[in-house]
Image 1 (tube, rainbow, N blue to C red):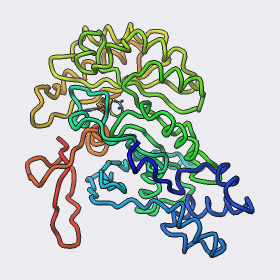
Image 2: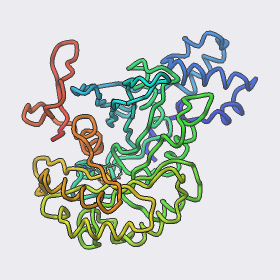
Image 3: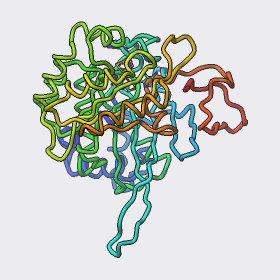
Amino acid sequence: MTKNEEFKSIYDYTLDELKGMLKPSFRAKQVYNWLYKKYVSSYDEMKNVPKELKEDLEANYPIDVMEIIKREKSLDGSIKYLFKLRDGVTVEAVLLLMKEKKIGEDGVVERGEKYTVCISSQVGCKVGCSFCLTAKGGFVRNLTVGEYIAQIVNIKRDNNIPENKALNIVYMGMGEPLDNFNNFTKAVEIFSELDGLAISRRRQTVSTSGIASKIKKLGEKDLGIQLAISLHAVDDDLRSELIPMNKAYNIASIIEAVKAFPVDTRKKVMFEYLVIKGKNDSIEAARKLLSLLNGIQAKVNLIYFNPYPGTTYQRPEVKDMLKFKDYLNERGLICTIRESKGLDISAACGQLKEKEANGSTWDSTFDIYRNSSGSVSSRFLCK
Ligand code: SAH
Ligand code: SF4
């Protein structure tokens, strides 16, 4: 365990734990209210909490205000963040804005905004997928529970997102959430606390590269969250080339674990399928995918491979993506293509890597957020 994993912030604790720690216990609810409904960044702001308690909390359980070292806004309003953690390492999170169509009581169509935040689980990743930039840097460390929570609170504070505005969380940023199992599941619990952020578990989706044993363990916990599987291939040879861990947990073992996973009857398990030109973009692959998912409450999300310098893999042709999608939809398997802009960035959320300024690597859909001196010291590698 590195030094930072021993670091305790107030965000590490569930409400019940805080009730046990603070006397009298009603203080816990007050503190939770300030932290998660008002997003305070200092104990000073907690008006109804006694000074001694605030000093004690400050000394032992500081509020983890992560430094935002980069912020990029896309043309569709989505914002990509680079956070610096206490030990100097960095992780990314993305706020995605999606248009939401609502029919009002008078039948008038209203356009609202739907917020989804894509958050990271680890600095680096052990899984080592051959197409993923996060994997290239190896594994550095797990995020703490508090660092999961801090990503959301910092983004809500930074955007003045009202406390009661519905928000979705996707665990699709850097790293493998199920490889940080205990911290990840505790974060789910804290996020859903009604006296806190109150983010319903149905609005939380975990994406995993397919650690079958952990999918089973997660299913047994029956947290009520949504599951997304990064499948990417329909035969084990190709999947093992893309995701080496497939040698330990092959496709059949993942399908078996998914079948045992408790899925809300109104919901489906999402199968993410990263499409790489000439590798897995054929109709033959679509046909195998259809039969593989037979009998599962499944939907498929096709993701364009995002190339980066040094990779031999290529982005697929639009026409092949459409053919693949139509093939599945026509046969009753719901299939969507992950959109560009914010959503595209979301897909790449775990793969973006900080890079020294090099104009050619910018994603053109993003405006550059400039710091006060007007300069940008480093950039994300996105497309
Ligand atoms: N480790 C988890 C969650 C983070 S990765 C997982 O693998 O599911 C989130 C998604 O981004 C995964 O589906 C992953 O396969 C995809 N991804 C990784 N590299 C990509 C790239 N270069 N282009 C597009 N999507 C990519
Ligand atoms: Fe890790 Fe997911 Fe990247 Fe694979 S795709 S290396 S599991 S972050």
